[in-house]
Amino acid sequence: MIRALCRREVIVTTLVLTCEIVKVACAAILMVKDGSMKKLTKEWSLVRSLTASGLPAAIYALQNSLLQISYKNLDSLTFSILNQTKIFFTALFTYIILRQKQSIQQIGALFLLIMAAVLLSVGEGSSKGTTSSNPDQILFYGIVPVLVASVLSGLASSLCQWASQVKKHSSYLMTIEMSVVGSLCLLVSMTKSPDGEAIRKYGFFHGWTPLTLIPVLANALGGILVGLVTSQAGGVRKGFVIVSALLVTALLQLVFEGKSPSAYCVVALPLVLTSISVYQKYPYQVKKKPL
Image 1: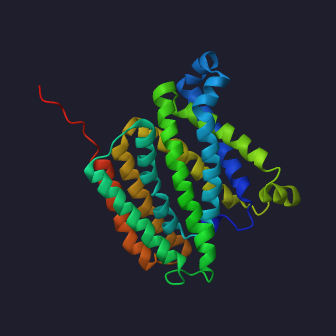
Image 2: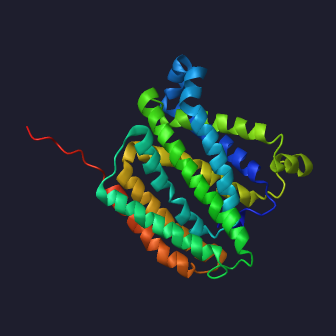
Image 3: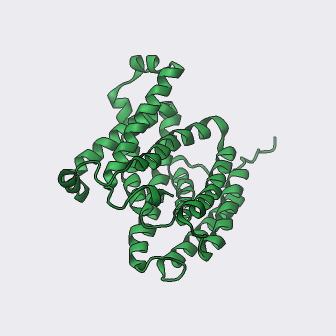
C-alpha cells in the first residue's frame, strides 16, 4: 500500500522530515490538551533533554531513513514481517543495558522470529517468489536496510526505556524531543547527502502527491500511539496490536496491489504471529526464594 501511495521519485529525507514535523505537532497538541505543557515550561532543561533523548533520536533518524528505503523495494507484507525482528534486538539490548531477562518461552519465540526472517531473506533475495527482475536490489535496498533498522530500533528502544525509568520522561515529551533532535541530524546530513543534493535540485516536494501524505500521517500517528499503548495498555495488548497490523497489511496488499502474498510470506507469517504472541504472553517471572 505504501508503494502505491508513495512514488519512487519522492526523496526519502523529505518523507522522514515531514513525518517528524507531524509527530511534534500532534504530540504538542496532546500535551496542551492533557495540561502537561504548563508543567513542562517550568521543569524542562536542555541538558536533561539531550541526556534522555539525544542518542535515541539520532539512532531513530537513521532508522527511519533506512525504513523509507526499504519501503520502496519490498512488498508490504514482507517488509512488515522482517520489521518484527526488532523485537529480538530489543530483547537483546534490554538485557545488555537493563539486565532484563527473558523466559524460556520468550527465547523460543525469538528463535521462531529469526527463522522467519531468514526464510524471507532467502525467498525475497532470490529470483523465486518475487516480481522483481533484480534480486540484488531487493537484498541490498530492501532486506538489508530493514534488518539494520531493526537492530537500531532495538538499541534505541532500550535506551528510551532506560531514560523513562531514570529520567521519568513522559511518552509525549520523548516523542517531541527525539523528533526535534532527529530532524536536526537529518538537516545537517543533507548538506553532503545525495538526498540533500536532490532537494536543492528538484525541490523539497519533488514527486509528492496528495496521497503521499497518507503514509506520512499514518507513520507519525502510529509512532505516538505505540508509545501510548505500551505505557497504558501493557505489552500483551501491544502484542495483539502488532499481530492485527500484520493481518491488516496482508489484506491491504491484496486490495491495493492486486497480488496474493508469496509462498515465502505465507510460510513465514504464522511463525511471526506465533513468535509475537508467545513472547508477549509468557514474560519472565522472578522466582521467589523460599522463606
